[in-house]
Picture 1 (cartoon, rainbow, N blue to C red):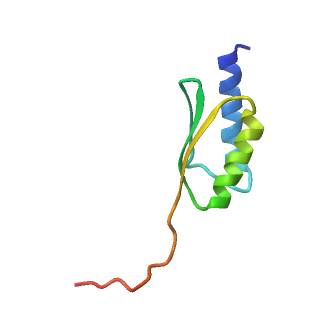
Picture 2 (picture 1 turned 135 degrees about the vertical axis):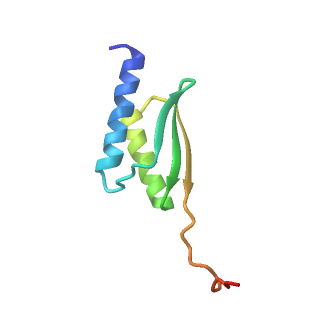
Length: 84
């Protein structure tokens, strides 16, 4: 198995783990770009982001990773919405 094939296998395994584990995250895009594994998407919380990065490190250990994971703002509004 070549280095590229091994990387693709590890990325596929990471996708499976993110879907199956407690995070159940399907909204994270994972691509190989310019020698880096790029994680991109919106997650529900900082703890979810940390868990995704932990799983990525376990699956991709040794491959360089760039994570552009945005935490969704799910706070309640400070005042009621006024409709006109």
